[in-house]
Image (tube, rainbow, N blue to C red; front, side):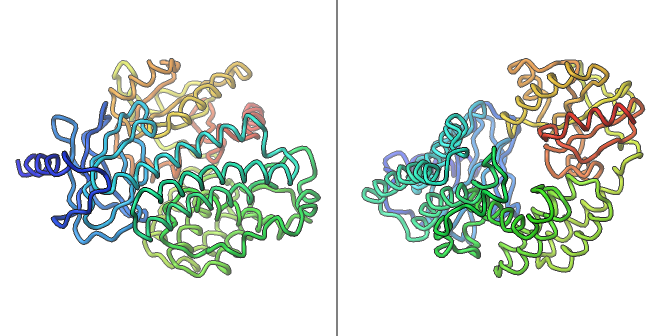
Length: 470
């Protein structure tokens, strides 16, 4: 009853307010409506730390009052997630439709203009990424490539400059908005030599003009308040991937999943990053990706010990310790840990009762519809090449209704679909499931052939072929 009253008061406060009305002094709020919800709550977090689970009412609305609110980037999640910028005194109302999450997310109220700009930037970046692929921009020569991505940067800079002319925002928000413009550009510069095909990568890196990376002189590698920004994350990872490769490129080919690459990457992060929050984020993501994708038991032990001696965050240390322990359950030759699953007919089955022939098992959720659709298409294409296999598409983190609706909407093969209905945290522990990109290859009895592959990997087809010859 109190929450309904607060929501009603918030609506009244906002009804006559433009988004640039001076901030309120009665508290800080985030509320809104979720159209076509897939669960009964939304999740709020900051700096990767869970803050609260906020219930939806019978009208699919919610309201949250912040306490001791530090300004900055938060993450709002309901099946999918987006960042939201909050300052003390903000009273934000959002509306989102889960069918088209990013495209429908809009804000009204105090602080709305800032957040609507963030969404504009996000959608602009998605549009640019599609153009980068369509126009094969990463395959252009350095001078043409630089002009192409600079034109994208200039368009977003113009958007920001026009916004700042008509909106009075804090210095903190302006710095975050500028970072979004700059680090999208920097991230593309860093990944360019690693994405350029058709020539020897080592010779190509050596051929780049000395001025190509002059911008690095202006970059802050230790800005903790930017770490929730995806462009800043992409820039840092692209930078350290290239920097690591430069350490060994005379000895081995580029492989971001190799022991050699990750050894150098961890060392470079440790030596070059001074801020503990940024360092913990980079080290943890690096070791997590390696443990999730490598079958090198000895290499995993070495990098794990190296990580545990370097990491400043006890919470991150525990997360990786749990993942490392879980990896021991899914070593090659062991039976895949049995899990209870639901079929579309709502029958309860397990891996043991379902696996009757060699299979590859992958995971998806409505959190990432693009990944889900591409994974299912790839899986079907592999069955055409390897009819000896079947596949199991395991949905995680969705309820039965939204899962079934997605299968019907996207025409997924119904006989290959399963829903995990148990505790997701337990599934993570059982299968070392650090990401839905993980794919298992098992034999007809459910014994693991490969627990660290990826349906999207360029080597996946050869891994299926190898599995058949076991």
